[in-house]
Length: 158
Image (tube, rainbow, N blue to C red):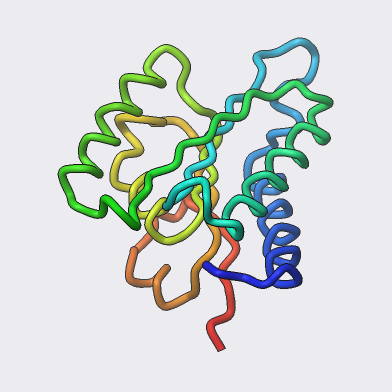
């Protein structure tokens, strides 16, 4: 996704509505319960402004909505430079091990590639997590054949 700032803002608002409606993340940390763990997946590296804007805004809103009682993690796949299946498989193994002692409760997948990745590797990385996606259109979502419990905000590809 390469949105201009107005499109990014609209996308962020839509994504956050979906996140809060689908996951109940705000109520998950109530009454001294466990702090929710949120994993944000970025398809490329940290130099892509559009995904950084969306990711950082989501992070800020999650922290605000939970009064800071949330753990937010970020992973950058760098798929623009390393798109080979071997790289993706290594990432999956690494993240499965990295989060084995504290599985994410929510995964926010930014873009088609991140969504494809987490759907394929969900059981190893975040088996019980809610998955929210955004940053691509209806045609790509249909092609991915997303599970019914994976929700998101699709962009209009007109």
